[in-house]
Image (cartoon, rainbow, N blue to C red; front, side, top):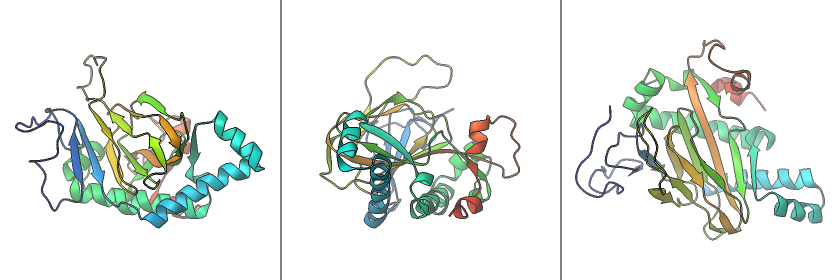
Length: 261
């Protein structure tokens, strides 16, 4: 089912990578298949520093607007060390940037660099932007962690997850995303420590399949902002069979996302 790679450190991307590839692969075990199994990809400079700032400002402004005066805002932060802020709540600039990230950057990346994975996941290698995109609950979002903020280990169960660190270096301590080894469907998953913890630079996209178990580690100080979108693709003319009401409400075509403002 999977391609077993031999030689070298199973968690290292050295030895296997072609230098000109616009991504780095972190394998979670020797038994791996690019993107589809025990594989996490880092895509450098997926968005610019200015785009990171736009999303962070929109998230911070939304929290401040909701909570009113500064004293209430500071009290709210102490009570809510983690908050998921949906991009459609953050204004048209943030929503349009989110659409651009997914439709104009992530999907072309998958078509160009991961055609076999695209075929396996979506049933086609091209014209992915003509498909319908269905999001996980509350996403796309800007996830905002302050001291004590974390997300427990989980799987997303969608075709693709992309997360992008928005914060500048030094804006927080702690944090990072932990990953666990992926096991074949139906097998028992042992209790074990994560095999990798990634601390990507600002603007770097981290991309992985929805069956990879992962966690957002606790921030110890400062504020960590991360853009997150977990999504699946379906034929544009797909009906509602197999999708619950919440899923269908969160399904969009490329044109509908750009028309939301």
